[in-house]
Image (cartoon, rainbow, N blue to C red; front, top):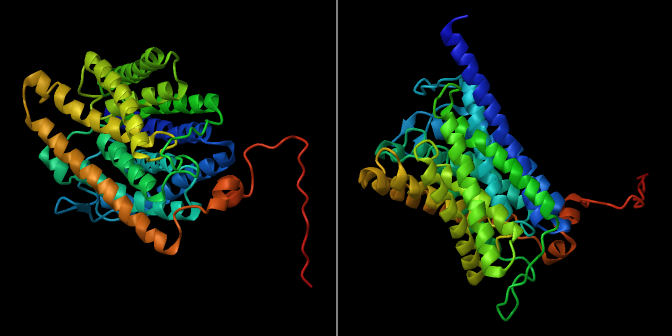
Amino acid sequence: MTIESLQLGMDTIWVVLTAAMIILMEGGFALLEAGFVRNKNSVNIIMKVFADIIIGTLCYFTMGFALMYGTDLMGFIGTSGFFLEGDLSHLSLPVSLDAFWLFQAAFVIAVISIVSGAVAERINFRAYLLFAVVMTALIYPLAGHWVWGGGWLGKLGMIDFAGSGVIHALGGFAALAAAMIIGPRKGKYSALGTSTIALPSNLPLASVGAFLLWFGWFGFNAGSTLQATDVRIGHIAIVTMLSAASGGAATLFYTLFRYGRSDAPSVINGSLAGLVAITAGCAFVSNLAALFIGAVAGLLMMAVTNWLEVLKIDDPVGAFPVHAASGIWGTVALGLFASEGGLFIEGEWYLLGVQLLGLTALCIWGFTSTWITLKIINVWVPVRSTAEEEEVGLDISYHGIMATHASSDFIELKEHITE
């Protein structure tokens, strides 16, 4: 066995393993969102996450990967690699194309799951399936091409190591557009403008979901090296841990001193905000910078959550504050704290300018493309569930079953025989 073949084997194992860690994050999304919503909508959350994996995998294989990593056309779109066939010789990969595709497919699944939480408890399931197709086959792959696939933002020098901008800011603004179009849950805001709280069904479940996401994030960030022997892996892991802990600490102490109690949902989302924020610069910022980035992300998440309440935009799981706000901050923070080219480190403005330009493009694209897509879908399939479906719960309305049943419950099955 040669050194080259051993290296290839190690890199392949690393990439496949970290891809599996990212896919496991879907379990985190499922538990987190199911714990945050009411019991009558838990199965619907699980089914949307399964749809994310199923549709995301198939659409990215048939079309999305080609648009993202195919031969570049004018800096905006890829044109080869549909069904992983055709000319992809321009890709210089340390692992096989199959392993690289699997890793990237895990990313696209995560993007659509961000939108899922923002429209929880009131989106028509059929409309969601249609939107998932467009998001994973077109919206995300085009944005990914601009930054990672040889497109115009990458050529300008935008850096987003593992996706604070491409995945989280884009997905967060898509979630905002979807929440605005679909509207708030029934009873969320009174005629007088006051907000009511829909209590989470199971916070321990949500916390386990957050822990799974936290675990998977090490694959998300460190796996983006694509090489098992990359000396940056240890540093990427520690700044990921520090930023998450700092984001959680900021929200823990803020709520403790502001409200006299430490608010569990805020601490959960604060830690996730820290993870989102460090994703762009995890390979390029120091440990101390990571602590600052995470703390700011946690507090920013709290501020944006309150801002959405003022605007009466219903986001049941905090998708926009966690992913969009923190993703924007993390992408900007890279321009400030990067060891090479960072404004605060080397006094250079160019990287920060490119980061801001890229963020503007990604956020506008995520919002407008989602808005247009849902408006078109609504022509054929109503994007909003009916008042009756929402009242009964989406579990029964769309899936015919509840999440939990008493052991004494029986269902009578009647056979209808047609003569």
